[in-house]
Length: 536
Ligand SMILES: Nc1nc2c(c(=O)[nH]1)N[C@H]1C(S)=C(S)[C@@H](COP(=O)(O)O)O[C@H]1N2
Ligand SMILES: [Mo]
Image (cartoon, rainbow, N blue to C red):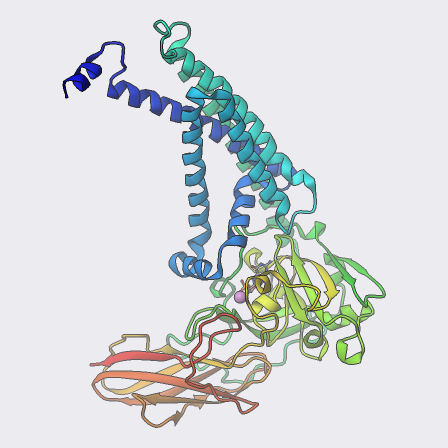
């Protein structure tokens, strides 16, 4: 071991601490360059198209390629924060890469700068490959950012190498550490300034969108919602209200940032197979039509048995069938060539719906209003699609911008490409809202209550049982429209001890929920909701 200690003691070898410090400076050099690259790219994206910024584009590409089970895990794990977690993850990977490139630049400046350019290329590809991109311009933000980043890295690492001296060089001279730190500080300050600038510009866009939403005056419906019978709402504590408030309405989408559109600039195209008169409509055109108002319960295919992704609202919109007829579309049953309607959103979602379902007389609509207000941004402002009876991923395109008539043979929409069913009517389901799992009610009369849904078929009967005992008929709330859920309640003479409550619904077609349990993929969860409680 003697030789080792002599080596370490050789005076012209930097000691460990000094070496660590120089690696840290090299990493810092990379981080600063990465930071300015990102700032430049995001600022240019504000002008080109916000979704073409590298963070959103790469994030979107990651979401698109994430296997469904991982996606579901992420949603379960992080809920609506899943997108924030994804962003932080991407930033962490970028930072790591930038630091490594900084260290590489100490030995191979040119290779490191090229690596930055290559990363920019990845961002540019992600932006242009996204389904919502229809212009090569989307590559510009990432490419410009990478150019600036590569330049910054070249200059900064040059200063740093100059300061540290090459192996065998005489002692460092020239601007040295101060020069590097000054330059790095200046670049960081500039990048932060650019960041604030893009934030300001983005806020202005968001403010424009908010102003455009605030300016919307929803017309009165030509066909108002049928009056709800008294007693659709049992008003039991903890039972989901018949109409879900907008702020409480579940939200499921892949959007990393909620699109904030300006209604004045919104347009919708209707085109494709069997369309004799292509349409190109603006928002005012929609508002000028005879609008219908309907209560409709929406459900997500990802909802687990007993899960929260089901809500009900009073929607206002244009009957989609009338629009399609105006475009010359005939359903397959009347000889039309297209059996699939593909809706596209501004954020690249594609949703495929059977043309037959849209035109069979149900209240399929392009919705502009939700519970008396313009659509909230998170729920699709200015216009979204709704087709009663079908899960959201095959019917409810938010931020819609394009409708294409095609066939199921010719085209697979976003979730279908990821293994979900191409056609997915909502399954008959029921849920116990109260008591909550592991509640500790007192022995005696306990109110068990919940909701049941079988949109477009309607709920005929709900039964409850305790601990595999006999099924008991629950009291049904008054029945609303066929496309809405139905509340139910049951008075339980509860005895103390642990008990399992189970519910099952029967729809108007006579179908009763079975015990057969499946997960959400590929066509919606099946099985009965059970809740375990401990009666005191
Ligand atoms: N543009 C867009 N529309 C979309 C989605 C999406 O990810 N992007 N998700 C769909 C799914 S899976 C569901 S269940 C419904 C949910 O609508 P909500 O968020 O208003 O409840 O929107 C549908 N429309
Ligand atoms: Mo969904």
